Image (cartoon, rainbow, N blue to C red; front, side, top):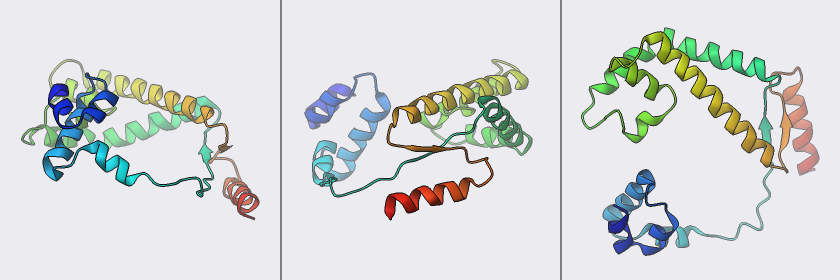
Length: 172
């Protein structure tokens, strides 16, 4: 697929890792549908962003144990409210397979494996919980790298007022 992309859009092919099948497939899809390479779309979409002023607000739940508790509650709520039935329905969709991009999402991957008999429902739940906590950790690491972001705990009393005051200060 990478070689095919290179023949239609060498600029995008050079930018993408040859193993990034999802992005390569998307770039080929854009070319086939529009007749225009992805790199050309990107050039046309580029505009001067110097006049834009972003205000970044990071919502971070502390302590981490509370975040983990909420993740676990949310996952159990999803499972208790039909997540496994949703997975069974998805598995019946034509063209959707275990290795499809959409099935690489946290939870879907683990429950697909459970429905294939790779492990128990409990293990699928536990693996989903572990993967979700890992994802949250990566997201928090990324947020910490956003040095100009205003960080606040959305669960603290007055969080909305704190955010509003920050916005007023930045926009005022």
